[in-house]
Structures are given as structure tokens and as C-alpha cells.
Image (tube, rainbow, N blue to C red; front, side, top):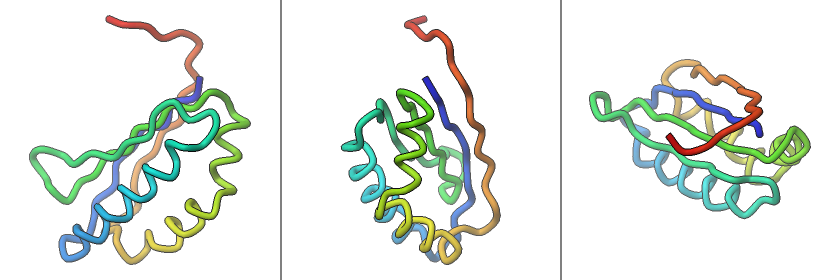
Length: 99
């Protein structure tokens, strides 16, 4: 399993646009084969800080995701809505289960 986790600061005046784009992106991505989870969330202390969390079946599913039209549209929009480069980390997970 591949896990992607990260955060990005959103321009305050673009927050509503960022939320719409995130919701559209999440909806389209969750329908992709190999996507187990894909969600955005907002920080409780800083409303302009957004988090991304993704779970993918394997590298092939993640690679297909990067080739989708909705990913291309999302990437094109990012420079207008982000305040600074985000931080994103990719994890390769060999086992997962409830705590």
C-alpha cells in the first residue's frame, strides 16, 4: 500500500475556490481503481492550511492517477490558490491494521 500525506497553505482570498477544487478532485479520484482513500481536511488552528491524505493499492494505481484529466486540471489550478509550496510525503506501507 502507498500512503501520501501532506499539507499546503491556501491563499485566504482563494479558500472557497480551493475547497471546491478539493471536493471535485476527491470525488473524481475516489472513483479511480486502486484508490482506497483520498481526502482533504482543514487545520483546526489555521483555516488556510489544508491537509491531503491518500491510500493507494500500489505504485501502478498511483501512477495512473497522475495521468488523469482531473489531476491535470487540479495541477493547473494550484499556482493560483496555494500561498506557498506544500509538503508531501510518500510512504510505502507493508502492513496496516486497527489500533
